[in-house]
Image (cartoon, rainbow, N blue to C red):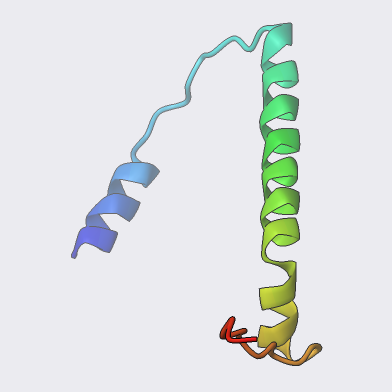
Length: 67
C-alpha cells in the first residue's frame, strides 16, 4: 500500500521551476569524486578479506604467539 501511495504522489508532482548556478556542477563533481575515493579506500583496507571471500587467496592461519 505504501508503494502505491508513493508512486501516486510522485506522479502528481508539478514541474519544478528551479535555477542551478554554475557552482552546482562543481559540487556534484566533488561528491562523485569523493564517493569514488571512499570506495577505493574501503577496497584497499579490506583487499585481503575480499580476495579470501572470492576464493582468490588462502585464509591465513591466526598466530597464537607461543614461539
